[in-house]
Amino acid sequence: MADSSSSTINTGHSEVGAARTENIPVQVTTIRLTKENYLQWFVAIIMGIAGQGRIAYVNGRKVEPIETSAAWDTWFLEDNQ
Image (cartoon, rainbow, N blue to C red; front, side):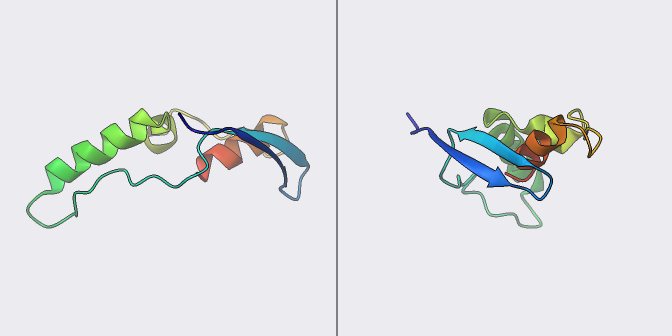
């Protein structure tokens, strides 16, 4: 189980308290993309991203809020993970 930590991040707009459970970068797949294995690589990447709960950022379902809203800071942090 991953350790949780809290930090305060200054994004230039406001300070955001962020609780993080995924502190370590994760290798999504060991499959190296070549000209011959795109489909296999694509499926592995999509499964890896979906497994991390970030697929909505890739397929566009997680819409960017207005930059002046309080939700924008959280969206920005999550979108850049």
